[in-house]
Amino acid sequence: LIAVGVAISKKGDDGGGGGTNVDGAGVGGGQVGTVGENPGGADVVPTPQPSDPKPTLSPTNAPTDARQMEIGKLVRTIAPHTPDAPFTSGTPQHKALQWLMNDDPLKLSPDGTNEERILQRYSLVTFYHAMEGAGWSNRNNWLSGDECGYSGVDAWFGVGCNEFGQVRAVAFDGNNLIGEIPNEIAAIPTMENLVLKNNKQLTGPIPSDVGSNMTELRQLALYNNDITGSIPPTVYSGLSKLAYLNLQDNRMSGKLEPEVEQLTSLKKIILFNNNFHGPLHAKSLAAAPLVYLGLSGNRFSGVVAHQIGNIPTLEYLYLDNNLFSGSIETKIGHLTELKSINLDSNRFSGSIPTEVGKLTKLEYWSMRNNSLVGELPTEIGDMTALSTVNLATNKIEGPIPSGVGNLKKVKHFYMFQNKLQGAIPSEIGGMDKLKVLFLSSNLLTQIPEEIADLSDTLVELYLSENQLVGEIPEEICDLVDLEVLFLDTNKLEGPILPCIGNRLVDLRQLYLFGNKLTGDIPEALKNLEKLKALGLEDNDFKGEVDGGICALTDDEGGELAELWTDCMSVPGQGKEVECGCCDVCCPGSDCQ
Image (tube, one colour):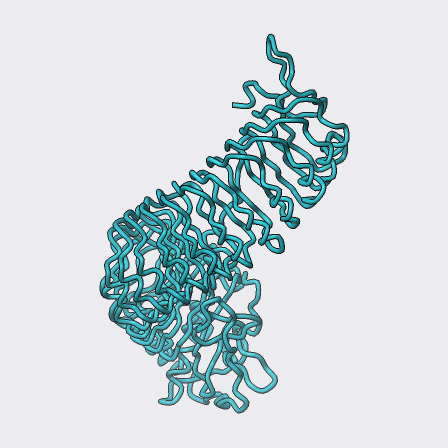
């Protein structure tokens, strides 16, 4: 039987904002938020509708033909890339122009006071047609009345305005937007928030004019769509007020250019799960008051330069699932505001610097699946805010430091697949909140008596594939909340303690295979009514599996789906164990 542990979330529930979807924009029911400041992703403060909006101007009495000619001239000024688009039948721009000329209920005319408003409405209606607005999930009030709304009448869904009737936000969450973002959306110079998320048929590149014209933009959130291309250079050069950039979960490519240093107001940059590549320009990023750097799930590479330590405001650092290499810089200790770090699944090497002990605000620490070596620093005992530690699948050796007993807030401790040696320290009993202890695939030799001190919290204990010797300690039976117990593939001797069956009644998985255990399989295991998997093979048990245990199997209406013992008849020896209900009898080909 192969003991398989629980899946480890790369950011988990204890990472202080560890989820890969970080939302800085609050959008709901058409209300539009300001720039997100909450790293955990809570909705931001909605924009209030003005209590006394700018009144709509009365229709002009100017001749219709002259009005149309002036509107045509006006809209041409904001389409330098495609000046003929407003006059080409069937284009979104042409549909918007025709609406302005013939169907706009406000009938505005370019008379020296309405030009900005006309262009604003033209830009929005072009966006509407380019994004197939007729098929939106919610298109309330679009193409009717005032885009900003007024007393008793809502604004166009997804549009937020200031008290002067100027659009400051366009925000859509999963509204079935289809097509490419038109350049015309950038012709609204007052825009501060552009949020288009969770629209999988929103395709094409980010319009270059977004950076050229939207100089007031604080928030650009275009995530979980199907956007392609690279970050336009104009985004770096033109958006000096940008505080929040989220492009995660698209199909974008290219590099994060050194010019990112021009985004001097940037607090959050989130590029998860794209195809970006190239180096991390830590020195350039240090120019901004950066709080959140999320580059997970790309192909960034190279050494993470020591300048990463020159971003003292950084609280969340996610570089996992890339191609970074080199050592963990000692200047990581300068990031004293850091709350969460994930460097999983890269090519980092070398030892963990002792300076990590300075990260006293760190709650989530994950560097899984790299090539880290050396001993776990004793300074880990100073990292008292930790809730999750995941350093699994490296080459860390030596003893587990006794300082782990200071980690009173840790709930999840993952160090499997390393080279840890010696006894598990008795101080482990001081980890008062510990729920999961995952130390499989190391060289550990002894379980301390103090494991019993975790009786109020420990739910999962993984000690497979170590060098544990002696008998199963009776203190295991004090862990009455335990649901998973993996002690397989060690050198344990003696009997299975009956108290395991009498007291650990919440067990779902019990793996004891691959040891030197002897005696009968205790009848008391029949009390484990929630058990789904029981692996007892490759031991020296004798006798018969009790009928009460067989009653737990799924064939008998129970939960037990996997029951393995040494019930295969061996020539010249017979059967070690009689079992009429086992799924697999060992030894045999199924037991390899």
